[in-house]
Image (cartoon, rainbow, N blue to C red):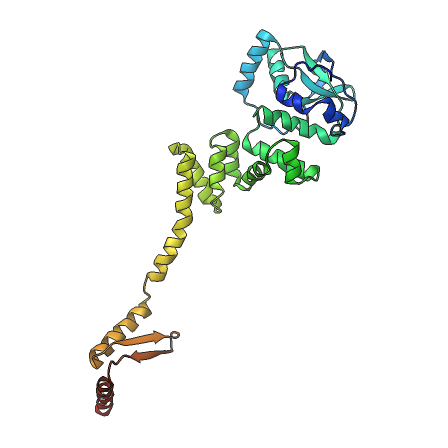
Length: 298
């Protein structure tokens, strides 16, 4: 196998001769490093990364001014120009540094594999924010008609990692923006998935930022919010209605008049039954006599 130059060990280990001959990346393959005009290079339109930290780019540009580009860009020919497959961040920093030419390795990839390679580079360098990564997995599934298991195999991650990442896309728009900007972490985002109400979700996300809450504290608050409706429902069930009070008062009057326990069981607002308790035959006869006497008096 040809000696590799300039590529990071992680990405290069995935783009080997075997990877190509097995048909995973069909097409011509050239490893020779060369230099081309920076004006002949264009960004990858399918780049999964959408946010580039300007301050970090400035720092990289300063480093490039001092030491040059150590790791070449990986590009493919597109007409008279070259499209970046891996190294867009270096390309942007090189422009900031004022470079006229940049080192590149020219390769030819099948269209279906361009996005995969760009995604792999960003993931391995941890350049994508959690939402960009989740969106990239979603694109792989939708555009290449893959299953989560297929995506997991392509990017060398567990299927559960892909699943948990894509679940973040269910967050409200405002919370996803906070996650993309780094205001809250991926752990916070996963905890907030426990809240279905968008307004509550956003309110808690803002509270996380304002009070610098940890993921564990966030999980506790989410749990409390989920329990609150249940507690309120129980309180509502225990709270007596006005009609209940009226029936209890009637029970007390009957108990006082008959000298024994009396229960009124309500069927609906207009119907029900009265249960009179007795504890001996003598007491039953006493209650009957009392009712008869009251009836005759009326």
